[in-house]
Image 1 (tube, rainbow, N blue to C red):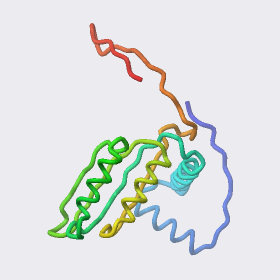
Image 2 (cartoon, rainbow, N blue to C red; image 1 turned 90 degrees about the vertical axis):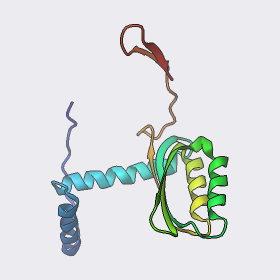
Image 3 (cartoon, rainbow, N blue to C red; image 1 turned 120 degrees about the vertical axis):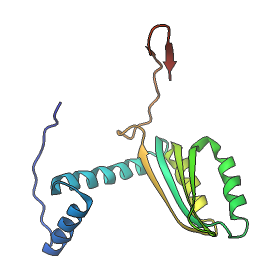
Image 4 (cartoon, helix red, strand yellow; image 1 turned 180 degrees about the vertical axis):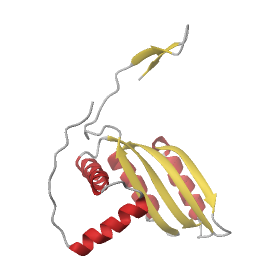
Length: 161
């Protein structure tokens, strides 16, 4: 079902439009409209997460750090164990002898995910960290799952929820 589109006009400085158009091509957007839709969805998602700190979210925490920093690996491991209920999985890369890139897939309430990410990013030795969240329910409202029962073939019924 196609959604109804609404047209509107936007006024802005010529240099800003030119820079935006240049980025559209680099990023592969087919039009200004699609790029603006993408930017608006991201902005609204971030605003909804701010407004609903108890809502369930999914996210990634990307960390770039110097593993030779005194006790950093041990502190990261300890904090990870303390918050194991938020961490779905981790992916770890050795960039070179001293530096590592780590990506943690997270799931949990917005406030807990942000608190965990802030604590990790603030650790001495973390060169750069970034948390990206997406609400599990785009409305921003907490949602409970209703159990559903379905089949994956004869004799393979099971319940989710």
